[in-house]
Length: 149
Image (cartoon, rainbow, N blue to C red; front, top):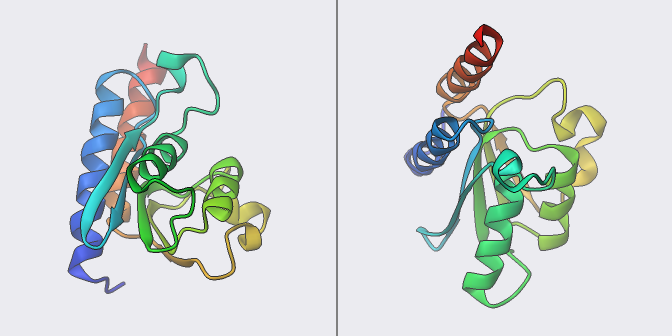
């Protein structure tokens, strides 16, 4: 798959967030939200640390981006996430009217596409598989480490 260099660049930034999650024993999913070629929000999973099942990387970063922009709609933004979003996060993306979502690894078990790709806003563009192997490898390493404990 050929992707613009900017998608790879920003996905690498999301991977850095995922690595932060890995270091604190959270499922290593990372996000950056970009507006006008600038990162306006970053996030990684905090479900264990906050004891909150809704503290996914996407939810954290959508809130931060809305605060940064001073409004709840993210029409001119792109969200880069290392793993295909779940249904909950896709719903939040729909309500925020994200302009574009770019994800790395596909999630055949819990990804939003399994439950219906129409969960996102109709105008939201979606690109999947950006740096897929790198994103998937980090997740595999995390769960391998968990199984060995």
